[in-house]
Image (cartoon, rainbow, N blue to C red; front, top):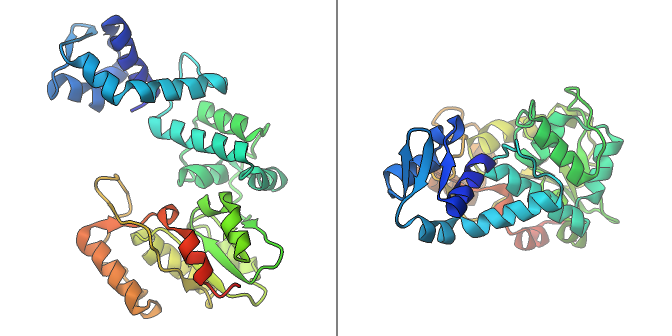
Length: 306
């Protein structure tokens, strides 16, 4: 859902009716409430509540709406024309939380120092380098929460981001940036974290691991394992793949775009028997493991970094 849908449902809850617009007419959530639950009626150019709407709204939507509204209002992001997706709001809330705790401050300094582009920041927080393109309101919201005046507007993807520690004993290259926003465990285990930006691995030609053991952490899906990992391995032949311990998620239920395929399975010789078993089970069950779901408190101490 996006904010227009969330606001419309709240208006229905408050006023019993709301004017129909194109977004609401095409809304999967609204049509589910109309056609399946039959708690909303559509007549001409308006939506009306039916018996049972109040109970379901209070159970499934009200707390969430109030939570999002308070966040948007408190951070001066609540505009009448706002169209943020619910997933966008959740990302913004995580940015705010990580800024408040200080976890994002080192990354913020690097974004400023290295003149990060919109595409880089999009990839950092939304896992898609093109997601923010053309979304000025969302770009401005990210800049507001990061307390950054501007982002570079070019396509330069030559920088990697590093979470340093006092006495690094090994390096973990991350497909996604989440671990770099949680510095405590990495530093406690003498681990230096790198983030190069998913498939943008050409910059690794200029990266020096300084003789330290280096490991690769990624989403365990087709793209992460069979596309990105071979590219990384070509650039850094000594890199080793980390074995995940996160809970598998259903690919269809999570609407994940990286689907398993029988083509391009080119890394079996690089895997341990345990890793091969995990991949086979994921493929058989049509599941994947999100990098951020791994318990690094268990993984990091097992590396040869102490």
